Image (cartoon, rainbow, N blue to C red; front, side):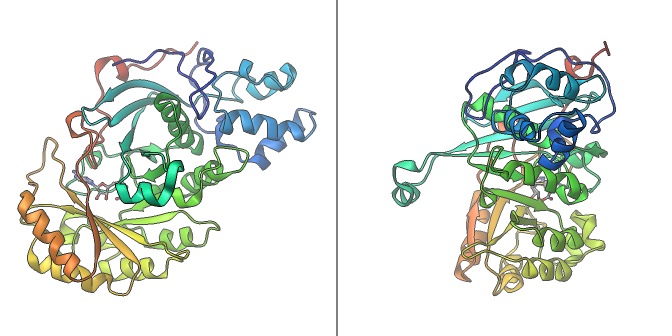
Length: 394
Ligand code: SAH
């Protein structure tokens, strides 16, 4: 379903204004104002001969209110708006929402188009709180709304079970393109997501600089001010970057797509394992600093006859022994192409039961949005004729 062009809004879905027409194709990233840190924005403001407090005002419009038009920045003098937005300098809207599909289970998949005509996808997943969570959180415990964001156009990894891999690598997204997914999704949902996960298209650790910059923008008190505890970066296992991520203060949560219990199987389904085998990956996970009560999440895509045996279920607890961790079991979500199969519900349950017997905290992630190809590993931003078209530069 195509969405109207005037899609805008603040993080709580209020106060929308019309977006200006795109000034056409420009150098990606360099003019993307939403990618600028407060310090970089302050430098632009200074260069324009304006006092430094204007930088906070502009930053707040861009990240707290997430406006999509210059006119909406009512307390910013028009001369500064013009300077910042001058041709080639200031892209306000690095992404446009192209299409949106809503699943029968409420999951919402959004496809965005970049300035250079690429397509990426994000998925909003509403989840009701459990009775226990409600009790614990009291009246303030709103239903969970998780947004799964993309970090790259396509992906360079070649995981055999993942639809995004079939696209190959396009390019890294800018921090502005990453945060804009969050802002547009919040406007569409009418409320801000409670949790953000970098589990959409791409390998976040292959785009470390922009992903960590987006993280810094998203937690900034002048901006959306997300709690770092509500943001999770998921990796297929780029070991050196796990160490770097752990050095950030604050750091986001870490998720690791483990998906196998032997190097033999992991080498086959995730070629990155040939570079950083399971032992090295788990060593990096163990070294990741965890705040009190936090855990490393392990994702484990269940593939029938490949990684779902009793022996796997017995090896997994040994691999994770002593590490504060939990395991998300993800029954494989099909897409056209590979010859994998999802294990039976019974097999999945007994796999989980075996893990539990060894005190592994584990959840089965029921597929969400699979009727609209929005479930884990199904994001391929399939182009339809109306979206592959590049906008004509004006
Ligand atoms: N590159 C990052 C983030 C994107 S993949 C990473 O590997 O973690 C997000 C999650 O989806 C990963 O845990 C991956 O194992 C899982 N996944 C990929 N394809 C899948 C599929 N077809 N069915 C179920 N899960 C899948």
